[in-house]
Image (cartoon, rainbow, N blue to C red; front, side, top):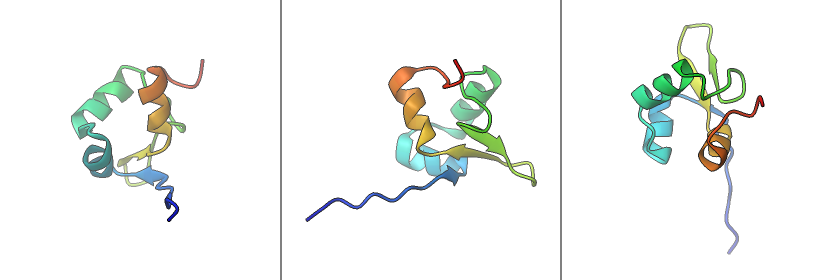
Length: 69
């Protein structure tokens, strides 16, 4: 049996918390500290909510810095 991979893309903080263990507060602190890059790791929706790219957060976990450098 082969593994099935589903790309989640842009998700709300509650999804990141449930599946990656990063709380919404921790995510917001990382955004404010400049550890996550806008439009790569996170983006603001027209309604003002922050969304996070589920797969791009793996880059931060693996490398500990944003991809902009």
